Length: 365
Image 1 (cartoon, helix red, strand yellow):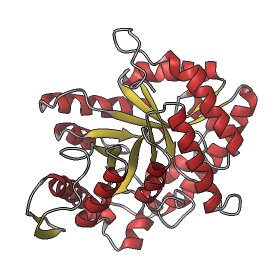
Image 2 (tube, rainbow, N blue to C red):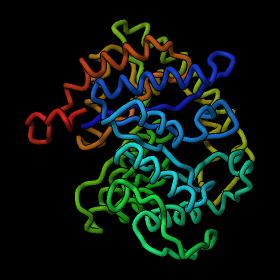
Image 3 (cartoon, helix red, strand yellow):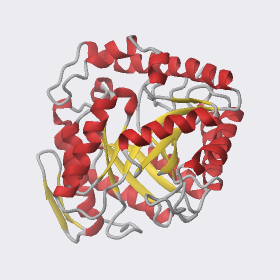
């Protein structure tokens, strides 16, 4: 089992400036490498406090690459619906070279109607655009004189420059919010998977990961594939302080998410069945239920160890948890301490291989 650090800024600009957030987050990136976390990752969002401090994961991860030498760098995710594949492939290949082959590329479709409107992209094209961008990028990374003829994107012949540092290209992850079908497609095509338990039920997420593994195996791809599951983590020596931070900042997250998804109250799309329920779910949020359902990790090291043990039982020992230690307006010092506590008192309980033998230090996280 592996652990990484996730950055998803859901922040009121009146409480923390963008430059302060970036400065603090990049200090935590350096700490993550020092503590042997497996990766750092960030998101892509626009036009609201819900992720709006991270409009370009490539730029943030380039800054992270300059401050580190070993830790992997993950886009979680590049929104393919708003991207042109020639530019996207080149920018990602540049980052892979600058980091000497430490990039993992997560692609997502996007799910916020307001963002699609900002870019003038019909939501009904999202799946087509996603598939075309992923296929075109992988072709540009490894092919010569690539000619691409899609429904949306047409270009070539062209040879992509620069080539990625990794051969034939960086690992590709597919971000899926609720769709077992999307997870199965990712598995069948040999990609890896990113999922978020906060927007799904446990049963639904088990179904998604099961569908992914089954499709990957049926298609004959080598290895089980990598599954990243994203959680917020509020960890401290004092349980009440950790729970108070969690309660306050999770409410902040839900309120800002409710604003970001408000347009789903009116929007409908065959590409996003059931997404109109996001508004209802946000309004009905109950922190105590979320904690009991292990949608958020919070408490002392012993509490969080027990929570992760349960999660491992649900989703398997070969998963990677991508943890956010500085969500919302958590003070920097508490985020820093939470990472130190996690590395010292939580992660070691899970850094064993499937046969019980210790994992080599270079692999453990």
